[in-house]
Amino acid sequence: MRLDLPLRMYGFAPPYGGQANSHPWISAWHAYKYIDPKESGAVLPIVHVNGFKISERTIYGCMDDKELVALFTGYGYQVRIAGHDLDRIDEDLAASLQWALGVIRSIQKAARQDNPIFKPRWPVIILRTPKVRKFLVC
Image (cartoon, rainbow, N blue to C red):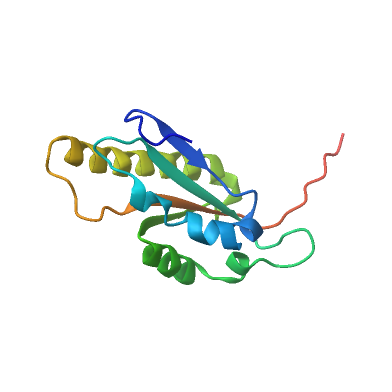
């Protein structure tokens, strides 16, 4: 992945919450520190926390919203949690993406106008959904 392309945007989501707290991902949460908002593109992490992996709960799935916000704030991110209401999940995720793009643009704009933000807090979206099974009835 090249981060030296100023107009490039990368979004990524660990496969599920169980992967996001593994050793390689713990280190990867600090990769944003290498991003130069004046010269680089941006990465938008999206963490899907659904409470359960295949056989058991995940670490992030056991954490409440306050704990998740504290954790990712400690990593240096601005946190937005989306997805509590499954009936409005599309609208919630769309609003979260717009929020994140606005944060990214403001960080980049400040840096590109030679007024950089000291230690900018890049956005992260935590998509929290319950583990549900829906069956189609024909």
